[in-house]
Length: 430
Image 1: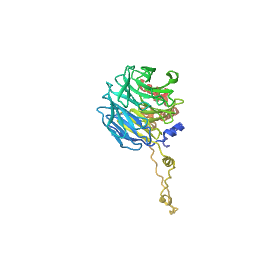
Image 2 (image 1 turned 90 degrees about the vertical axis):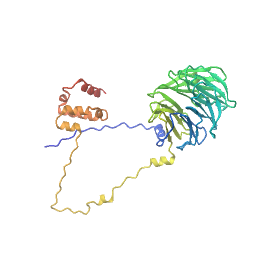
Image 3 (image 1 turned 135 degrees about the horizontal axis):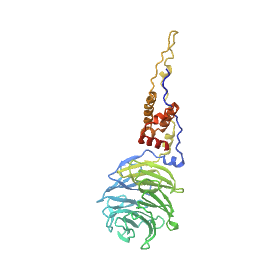
Image 4 (image 1 turned 90 degrees about the horizontal axis):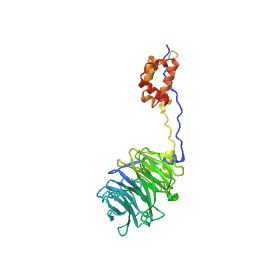
């Protein structure tokens, strides 16, 4: 009697990942280091000066980390409530931060106590930044206002009340100390000139604005809010250039690579996407374990830091040339033991010896056992289960072809209810 032959499952070639220069570049980071903070990481800001320490704003603290340290080298704790938006000055010596208590604080990087307190806002301050002349501070608050402060005298210079909802983000121009941009939950992105008493440009993002940034040339502005990342041409009066919808949830943060040729966006969908700023196509994607609130890239691209809603800080460092060579080197194949080669070498068979063949027990899958016992309907039910039809659809197709070869496909389909037929049709239609 001939033995039962298992169903032959054909193997199909898989499409390999397309390897590009961007893929090689962004995969050239080590396994991330994870640091647990005291609360959700709302802001990451790198110092503009080497060795590029970075400030992490989380809960009621601001931690300063070295480029390769897993423990903070300095901590600022003089906050009565949640701290927001710690930002370095361009000379790396001062840092400004907002707070839930509506006070803007100025710190010396080498000290711990606030040098200046700027009072005037009536609600939480989520936006702080320095102007490029280093003598003024920009702040934005949940009281719907953004304000400019004189740093040496600790006095308010100007207050703008054009927004009709929380002002949650903004940035200052590096080329013109009088220009700055704010984004609000009223869906508007506004460009202000400190020499005038009102905004000079307004753009409608159509969603609450979570973050904004300027390109190095400052001819283009990027805004993030909702599921959209939008690029605006400031040289054409703020005309929309492109709208990107590659995230599944709210985009919370933006940053640029050192060259300005790659744009990074982080989202509550736990992805960081990298865009080519020429084509605005996604060239790489990073996956994380929790919703992303902040992202920062070192000025030399040597470290990628991501802050998450669960308080985890993920730090990826770029591999050194020596580590690249070590990772690229081929592993030496393991050689079999010496006894494998000499086993049975000295045995001389005799004329009366005979070889006893040991039967090999064949392991059959569930559907093969059912086919062997001619339970064709049950075999079809087995391969239409979700775990098989979704993960290994080639098995489902192979069993259907075997039923057709046997001429029992019609019998296997007979007597089925609407539910089982709908599963079958959805599999066939795809």
